[in-house]
Length: 280
Image 1: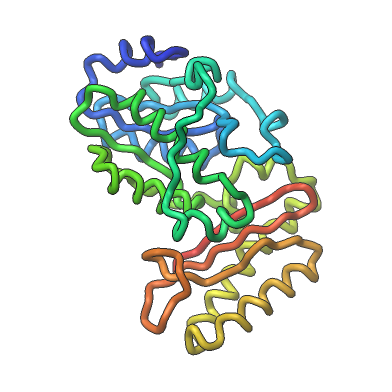
Image 2: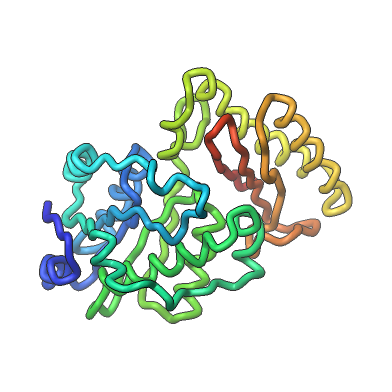
């Protein structure tokens, strides 16, 4: 496994690759990340994983400085998963000067849900992913990038970005990986206390119950009442939910009868904010 710290090192490592398969990450890897690496492996002739904690997607009060950096453990796991190249740039390598040019996603998709509660988040995500795409796929006629479906809205935003910029990159979704009790795997699960970890599965259960209720009622007529009931029930358990909502899969807008649906939620348990989603 080759470790590249700079853009010239990365490009040298990928000089003979015609179709890289790329998995962006912020490190602190878990089984969900490794599943994406294994999924990417047969989709290209070189499997690349980036490890970069991107300051641009953190709000001032969020956990950029305290976000876990687990470099040595990450490398051990990536090598075992068959990664060929790890791209781990310093901040000064990826942002050698203040990043005054930023990529602004479509507000109809990016300023709702996560974008409403984390303003500027998707601008930071799109900007860094575009820079990483330019780094990994420079000079290549095609490539593949794999993103986890747990970040459902992010996946949609990045697919739309690749489509509108006519990038020669296939955006592939990796299924959400879950613990035995149904909790979606996340780097931030490590912040949970033992008691909070036992409670955390209630988010996925709340989404499942909301989805079942939505399928049993006329939409969109009954949707506001169903969502409000779900919010109240989770709040009563000590959570601080941002949203529990049913949307249509195509554009994350309010669904009509017959639309394919996804249930999405974000809520804080103690000091830890968790997100999850379920297609129904």
